[in-house]
Image 1 (cartoon, helix red, strand yellow):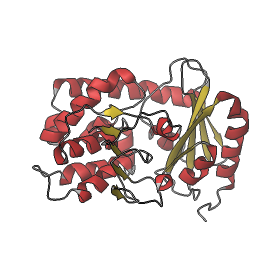
Image 2 (tube, helix red, strand yellow):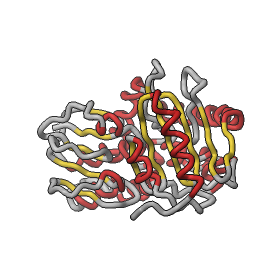
Image 3 (cartoon, rainbow, N blue to C red):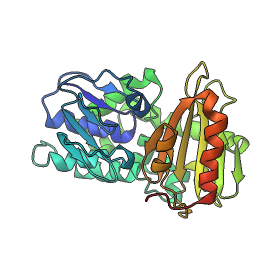
Length: 298
């Protein structure tokens, strides 16, 4: 039995809970959602999928993404909720040896982007916000760190986790990285009406940093679009779209929107990945829909 989940803070918490609730000895298999959608993941009987699209080869499935909802019967739990970790926590209530109530509140807060301006501008003052920024995904060499966080969160409160030497070093590095990232955003982001567009395709190594900073820097934008290459060969493009967490006037369900462009996600945050030769077709269409800003949930 294995846990398959995505490398973000919600996925890390999902893994911690599942290890406590089920008899699992195998290491976590960290998976990107688009790889699941494209059928690139070797899912096996007995696997538990969390915070990812459903695969009928698994034994249990837990998720909360709008565009991942299915109509066929399955074992596990699905609910539109602030976090997948919360779905798992409610499903297994009474089976945990530790009280994870506060951890779930933190996972809900982070995954639903329920953050104040001060938390975005100064995450170093807010432990769990900064901790969540140390889990970026995509970087395979970080798998050891993700597993370490799973181990720490199973046994310790957030304040104790933050005192771990490696976690502290990662958090300190994020603070410095965010300063650089802010300057990069200024140079590579334009405002098109009420849509901020960040294009990182000129970079060989994609810049990473505080994903909420763009909302504080472009307050007139109601939605952001970030474009980057998804592989070193530049054969695939990734587009991430998110409602501003401060100027909440975007009414487009971006998860539904991006499901038409080989992606999906939540109502307020979603992503897609596609062959680079489709970029000139897909990206203008995505931006056009966002500029129209019409309800697309019917």
